[in-house]
Structures are given as C-alpha cells and as structure tokens.
Length: 150
Image (tube, rainbow, N blue to C red; front, side):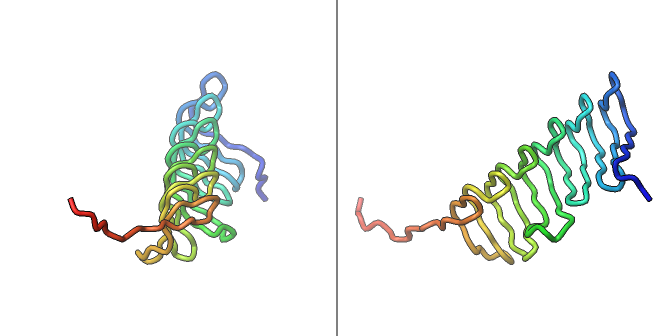
C-alpha cells in the first residue's frame, strides 16, 4: 500500500529549495513536472491531480496565465477549458468545452462565463450576449435600415 503523503522530488535545488526544472510527486495523488522558483511551482509546467490535469503557466504555486485544464471526473459539467487563468480560476478570455457537446467562447470571471460570449452546439449559435455569473443576457440586434437620404 502506498502512502499518499510521501513526497518525491527529482530536479534542481538552489539554497535547499526546488529551483529550476523538476518533477514533484505526492504519492499517487499529485504530480508536477515543470519549473520551480524558491520552492514553488513557478513558470511553465504540468500539474496532474485526481481531479484535473493543468498544463500552462504557474505563479507562486497557482495556475496563473495561459493554460489548458482538463477535468478527470464527471462531477463537473465541463471537461476542458483553454484560456487565461488567475489564482487557479478561469479569468479573461477562454474556450470551455462542456460534456453535453456545447462550447462557450468568451470572457470568464471567477471560473464562470462573465462578459461577452457565445454558446454553441455543433457549429450553431445557441446564445450570444453579455454573460453575468454564468447566465446570458441576449444581444438585441437592430436589423432595421435607416430611411434617411443623404
């Protein structure tokens, strides 16, 4: 039986801390391959946990910057997110792929669609508009033409 709390590190060490390129694993639960700075994940790396796989940028141990997150479990209604992350959450522009086949392209805040975005299914737009806390406020398009002459 494996002890999930045992940490194994292979890589560069500076001043007694992980610094440079390395592989850090904690039992069978978590594995990180990538850059470290002052003992923390910092730079480009890949973090694989029991819940998700994240490949992208890290700052001070947290997914921050551009990256791709793939969910391992079916508890989440989405399976993949590509885009900007801040403090481990989708924040900024991104593309989210849902388990039901829908795709959301647009702005995110605190891991939810928030800002302008488009939700589509099989290349057909389902909703387009301004999203707030995951809900869409549809765009209203004015298709009338002006009858004024020049």
